[in-house]
Length: 315
Image (cartoon, rainbow, N blue to C red; front, top):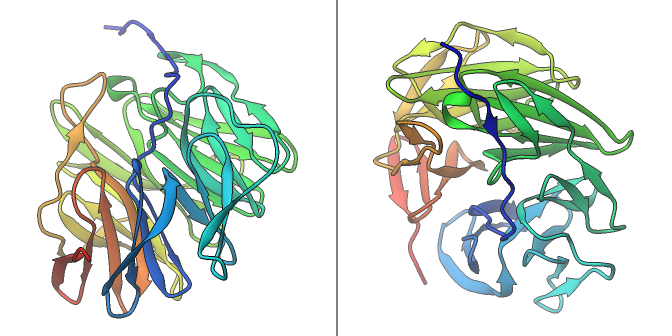
């Protein structure tokens, strides 16, 4: 039986999930409500919060960027303060933040806004099981490499999209799965590694490697009774790791999952437009020495590695 098409609605409010970066020897986590907490990356000791009220943070390695939902700010270590970029404010409804080609961008309404020059790229319309334009209430995942922005969406029982925007050319490409949705995106040095999952009356998951035109370069059949909640690359080895339910797994060359260790219990979120659960993991980030930062959508960040899992202490 064909399900009725789902029309995509875009919310006007700015709502960011937690975001995290490793920057200047610190682990920084923005909770999506204005607080940016800090820990030393090596000892994991709690440090003073960064001043200001940034709802999201991102970095290209050399610069730390933040946004309060309307403007972009560059962090100054010397002044220990955020410096606002000049220019017009972003449109209403920003809900995901990244750095592309050295410039901060956000998904705002049905498109992508660049803070440095005010450029806005309207997302294309789509007419599959889902009809609309944009990214729904908010992207499930976002990542960037060079001039390309990768955006993953999920619409419950109506599947989800991988959208790729080439900001140098102003061109979009996409891949649609009519059942699974995107819970994580990572650049592995050659391709986009994307965690596709579904959890409605049952669960299944698979990793696909996508070329820069969004086409599938490599995939394996979906694993039944599996659910991928996030995916990330270990920078030194370029190995892929993921969270499958409540386990940290390594993704092998054939895109299978090899258990590394338990991460403990991290709450799931509610799945929109479906009977089931959503990822509940906002970020998975390699922090060195075989350790991984796991940032839940709701709850305290934790570090896993070496068979251990520990919640980061508060200052």
